[in-house]
Length: 154
Image (cartoon, rainbow, N blue to C red; front, side, top):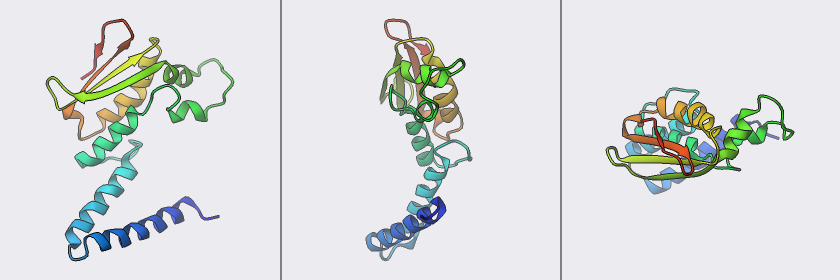
């Protein structure tokens, strides 16, 4: 079995072949596209600083993938409930993530939840990603419990 680095390098070789076939005579485009793709892959967990708007948008999009049953952190935690297991409860509280054109900025993210515990998911997972993204300046972020007034973060 190959390690994840070997698989990643093999994938990059396949991507090189694809880019060479599509942009045969344009090395500039091949380098730009590959660089943006690698930055987005490396930066999507917000553990490394990213610089491009494209990688920043992907970082935020990854953070928005948090509706009930979709978040990875709660699924990696033991399935038996235990004291302090806030990831599991907060992720299950997120019922809907709406992304649309904003009122004052290009992108509006509006999150509905079934319980207040969902604010933990927004503040500790999503907002952390937005805050470290070069695309932060283009985002409006709202969240609230269904039937209650929305809280505006950005």
